Image (tube, rainbow, N blue to C red; front, side, top):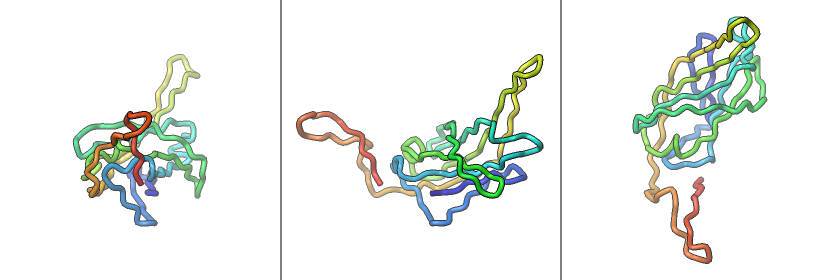
Length: 151
């Protein structure tokens, strides 16, 4: 599991205590844990939606809503992203990884949308020796295709 942390200066850093590497075509085995401070500039960030933005090596932008895990550590709360094949389809550098935190407040005369943008970081997806496609043909009773979950 890789850990991302939103720092007090809104930069985003990566720590990798177990030396985890993410390989091309990995699917739903590894996770990214994102640590968000509970508060920033007087705002309770636990009330904000958190979106992970990234650009794949094929220059395809992605936005993923993160799930709050509920684990807490030193005024931080964790969110989880399950690493799937959208993230790992192409080996190379995942660029412009950033967070967007948003909250809508409808208590006033007009709705107010609060936004917090993080800085960016990058992460390498290592090439895999497996050149098979994501699906394989299974010969048998069903004769259909099955999704392969590699790990």
